[in-house]
Image (cartoon, rainbow over all chains, first blue to last red):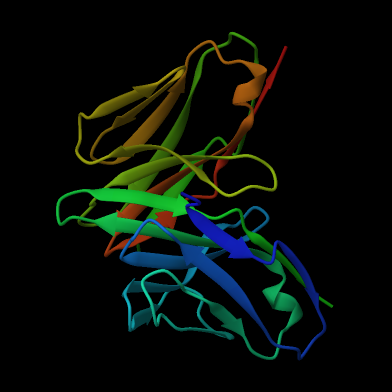
Amino acid sequence: NAGVTQTPKFRILKIGQSMTLQCTQDMNHNYMYWYRQDPGMGLKLIYYSVGAGITDKGEVPNGYNVSRSTTEDFPLRLELAAPSQTSVYFCASSYWDRVYWYGYTFGSGTRLTVV
Amino acid sequence: EDQVTQSPEALRLQEGESSSLNCSYTVSGLRGLFWYRQDPGKGPEFLFTLYSAGEEKEKERLKATLTKKESFLHITAPKPEDSATYLCAVLHDDKLIFGTGTRLQVFP
């Protein structure tokens, strides 16, 4: 049981390049999330998904795109990378049984630098 | 606007010196309050979920409590391995809203 797996762990991009951050969970969680964490700023929600085929914007979605074609995978796409996207990105997943929330498990993160 | 505020920003304790971390929130319709521990270079690690005022949960040297406006994370007789950043988050509309964390250092 691997939990939430993120790849890559580190990446350096040049301004204007594009990339996809991968996130996979094996817990059959219906909810998945992408957060970014900047020093001293806490975690900010980029996009989230309540199930396969359904995605929605979070607090800071500009410059990013997501898709959710399966329950397990929730990739985050960066188009035209900018220095402001330098950050640590975390994927998370959770399950709600209509009473309690379970999980809210985080991956180990992707450290992205845009130069 | 929904907000989560944690205090203090940083806390230095001597081993064995008990203290509390605060998390205050202004969220309508709170569906749960989460505490996480985060070590440098790693993802947040789940500690507790609290759902209603008056609820308490314990794990080793940590105890979390919840009122209608704030939560406390009490650390009893901390050890150096308790050094980490502790994050508080509230669940609102299926999403977690995070505070900026309290960076705890426990020295021998």
